[in-house]
Length: 219
Image (cartoon, rainbow, N blue to C red; front, side):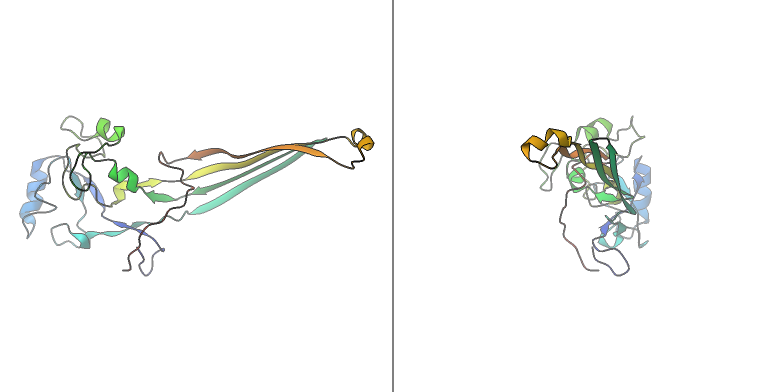
């Protein structure tokens, strides 16, 4: 979203307060709502409990908020150059700290229903750790949730994308000049290089260095 006073392309969605643990919580909110529904008529224990931003007693699009942005708090790099006799070594790395992403892939793959209501494959983590009456200590809602807000854009799908990447390592050797005189060569260096050597990332998803595009809304 594009909104005055916030970073361009800020993430916009609902804020999750928790997960409904029992029907009494839902009934109390429904009874206090002027519409008779706090979220939707299908809300059940195990569904996400969203923050009523405007305090009107029910959840709608007006309760969406700026929940973060994809800009890192710190970018940094490291460059090492070393020489020992005829050998030379270079390492270059780059990283970011304090960067979050809004994972639409995790959001869509954490439900057994797609946007049309049909069954689809979903993440094993979701199935294994989903809320049940016996497993309440989790941040993943119930598996059979059909509440229309469950897979809406929210801060539940924010994840850290901090990373450090070793982009290049180069190792070289400069041949002694006495070996080259007979060939009429003044200097010759042989080297090997490796790119994209390693990535240390806080994200379990795709490579966070990849660029992406998303739709923005003016507010």
